[in-house]
Image (cartoon, rainbow, N blue to C red; front, side):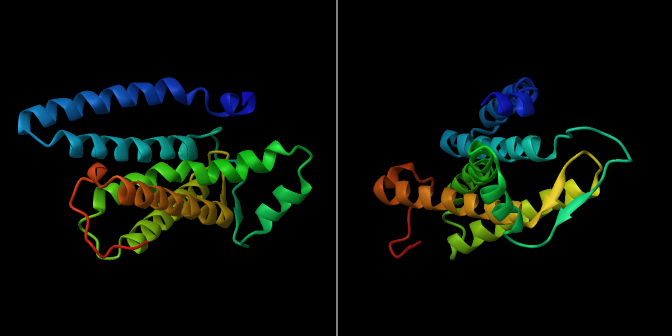
Length: 189
């Protein structure tokens, strides 16, 4: 946990300022346009999940044009190395688990937000999470900021998006009142 705080602790004040700004803007806009509070809250949480993900994944570890650009396009090799060659058991848990956990809110709020608009919601959520993750990896490779692009991150992030969808689907089937929209009678995940 201390290592996580060292890596991302500097982002907490920035994220809190962003949360405050987004909430104030959402409040003012929703009052002015008399928007549905439930939808405003979901949209704010969805935006904050995107902003939080971008802060964690794009925020530079360091700057410089001489930074080495690392890319891994071989699926599962990085995961294998982390699982079987780490000296500390917390390394795979942190690296693999947090890559998954990072995208769970994105998948959950995207499913909640788009549940009535998409005929095949599961495919839409998974594909959107996949594309969002690919975009992040392209940015990490393109801009010299001390980060590496890794196909394993795309796989883990997509799994996290799917888990967010599953959580939404379970909650929505158990408590249909949480949904923003009326649930179709024949939806399955």
